[in-house]
Amino acid sequence: MSLKDKFSEEGLVAQQEVEDLRAALVRAQRDLRRAKAKTDALVEATLQAASDAVLGNYPPQVPKKAKRASKGSSEAAIWHLTDWQGAKLTPSYNSEVMWERVRRFVEKAEKITHMQSHPVNDCYILFGGDMIEGLFNFPTQPFEIDATLFEQFVNVANLMVETVTRALEIYQSVTVVAEWGNHGRLGSKRDAVPRSDNADRMTYELARQILLSSGAKNLHWEDSGEDIQRVEIGNYRALLIHGDEIGRNGFASTNTITNHVNRWRSGSYPWHFRDVYVGHYHTHYQSSLADGAGAIYGTGSTESDNRYASVGLASSAVPSQRLHFIDPEEGRVTAQYQIWLDH
Image 1 (spheres, rainbow, N blue to C red):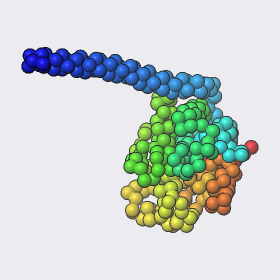
Image 2: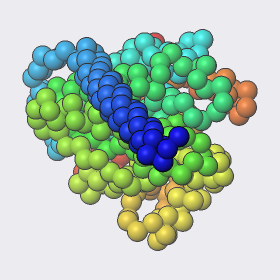
Image 3: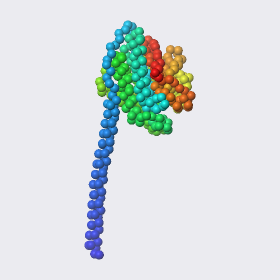
Image 4: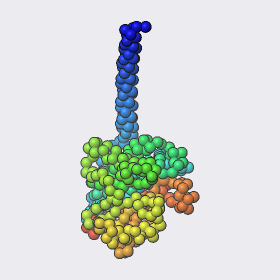
């Protein structure tokens, strides 16, 4: 073979390689466009599904009720609603039961409010955390729920929207203070996820945005990235915590919690407060603070038949939530109720 023929043949090979590379590039670009189109479609479908889920469960508007006039200075109501554990599945608890029990609380709270001898114009709803069951707290958790994390997010947010909407029909104004719990944690405790990236907080934000976009009037609800929430009603000041902040691994005795809070009040927490509202333990209790005036108010859960609590902690409780009435001028609780929810 002559040198000329050899170069000619090598040139043909090189040209073929270029054409092959060009064809491969065209195929890659075509596949990339298809993949991007598919991804965009999936994202759009996911967003549409979230929108449809919210709209499909959007609570009906409740007819306005006339506010009952009464004599005396006005007080405020506190609804401490905590540990709904939305989507938890036990022999006597599931998402449907959660809805029934929260609605039962609202009905009873309304009746008790109208029984007061003084006007109650304002309501403060304290969402205390663990409103959803989550998926990352223990290995068998995915087998003890009746809804995925996405469904929990939408379903519980809709229940919050209905609850706040009902409160707005009972009282002249509603303020929501929301604290997240350990069941809203994303990933394991060792995962590098900021504490404020919490599914409870995301659920609160969805409910808040729905209410704001619907034009809810006389509603005050701000998102907070703090670990501890502050409650201020006139001269009354309190803290809202979930309860896992104190003690090792998120569990502590009543005495340990009381001693810890007393140290907060001695100056280690930079805000003066009278009382503390706690969930997490699914039990209704009250513990006096060192000054004899303030108290720690533990609130129950809507859940029942918690196998972990009954077997591991030898603890059980009847489903309940807490209702208080506050004198804003005196800065103290004037009446308190444990609202039973099992019937």
